Amino acid sequence: MEKEKLRLDKYLWAIRLFKTRSQAAIACDKGKVKQGGDNAKAAKTVNVGDEYEVKTEIKRWVIKVTALLNHRVQYSEALHHYIDITPVAELDRIQFQAATFHTGKRMSKQGRPTKKDKRDIDGFTGDL
Image 1 (cartoon, rainbow, N blue to C red):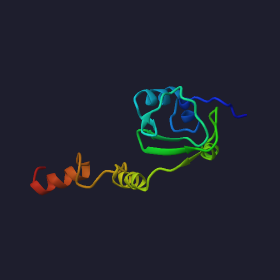
Image 2 (image 1 turned 120 degrees about the horizontal axis):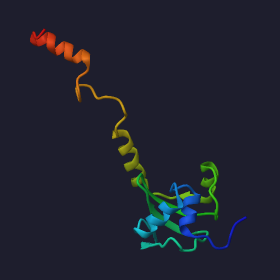
Image 3 (image 1 turned 180 degrees about the vertical axis):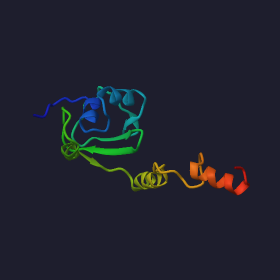
Image 4 (image 1 turned 135 degrees about the horizontal axis):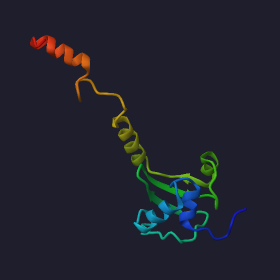
């Protein structure tokens, strides 16, 4: 089941850090995937025990390869093929960012007034 040679971009796609294999390859080309501080190429062979620093749009991952995976599987299954060793400071930053991010609800007294707000304003100023 496990292959002896596995490309880095295929591995990152298989463990679900990227939605597509081409996105993983582009991240490698742009220097968003590092091994030991050096940029890692998409065609680099992945070995068990390797550590990679991967920057995605959401988070800066630090992962350690525990098993090779050459095809995409469910997220719950993919978790068994790497260990997330991301520093605590990065995880705290993500938590803080998520807590302050837009919740989808309208903030009070901000944005465009509702019909009720307009009626209240018109009633207050005497415009009828």
